[in-house]
Amino acid sequence: MARLYYPQIRRGSLAGGKDNGVDIGEASRKIAKLIPVEIVTAYAALVSASLIVKWETLRFPLVYACFVICWGLTPLYLNMVADAGKPKRNQLIVGGLAFPVWAYLISGHQVVPQFYDPGLATILALLFSLVSALIPMNRN
Image (cartoon, rainbow, N blue to C red; front, side, top):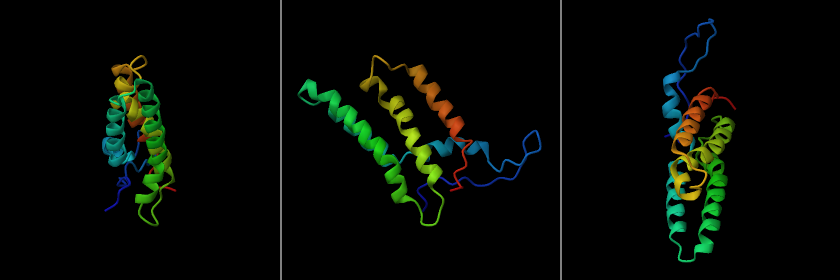
């Protein structure tokens, strides 16, 4: 079972007659596979645990360390679970870019409450979903 996202090619044409070969309806399924669920789950648990550490001065350095570590692990993890011979470069890049967007969405209110805005988090996540839908995942 493939762990990375490879869209099914749909032959069709845009209004200008150009063949795009991409099913736009796949965008929602695509974003769900860009970040490994293990990384997101671990990040959420690590942030929650960091925020209840007894020593207050250690809390936010731990949170930021968890963020950086999980962000760095995202492309490494995607590389490890990729099927041999399948293209993965675009997956690694987009997955790495997706992590901070989704981290802000799921933990921004805890980690950076002074900079968190739920509307902004939603807008960023939706825009990222739309833009990432334009990136071919079945090349390179």
